[in-house]
Image 1: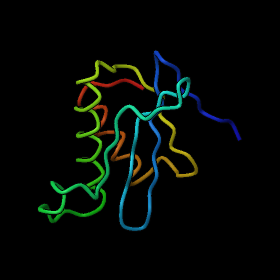
Image 2: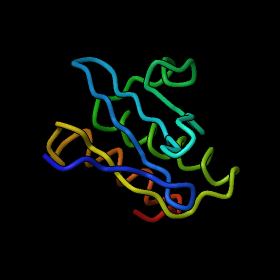
Image 3: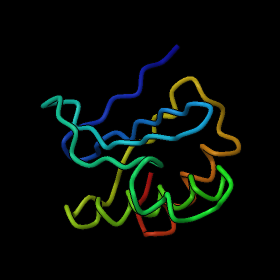
Image 4: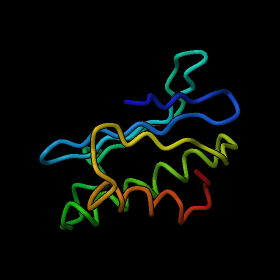
Length: 102
């Protein structure tokens, strides 16, 4: 299994998906610090009655907007053990819609 590592120029997007929620963060692996994070447990998502795939898309868009504020444009996508399908794919599409590349 190949490990995905980010750098200062291309930080890593790390995804964790549970049965109910999805968590995503942008990590600089050189310094070992989380730059930006977002999850479906944030307060603004509790108002929306959406299914998990639509919610993942919104989480991706929110993360994208937060990353743009830090002038991050190119990233590396680390889906971990999850298939690029369903909620993980929807999350990636939300991040791409904001204008980030990976």
